[in-house]
Image (cartoon, rainbow, N blue to C red; front, side, top):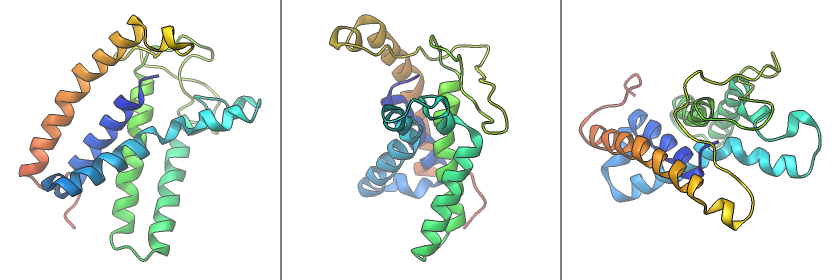
Length: 185
């Protein structure tokens, strides 16, 4: 699995492409970074669930790493935004679902050295785990401080930065000059 840095940066990139007005000022950019990090990393909240459960479906890289769960997150966002009487609730919920989906995309293209290999993209429709035939990102090794701050993780983080920072910067520049990828408001 990639680092929270990668998940947050991918989420931010999609968010500012969908909502370019967020990139026009410092405050909007901070808002986009926060939302990108939160929704881009949210799938890994299953670490907390797994800590309190031994059920296989509640472990890391399971229920929260599926497209149906991403849609559930989007539906929940829509209901909350409607309850708060926010304009553009559906549009915002769709964008947040896409931001959440970046997590699945990055994990799908990441080396996975633990069983079950891959992520259950279509759970609960099927329990089959899927992984891309091409590895773009390296999995982060967990463990003690030596492992966490070791050479492997440094190289994995460097690879993430070399791939995602230019993409995020290009999205930022494009967002500063363009309209949304989505249908006009």
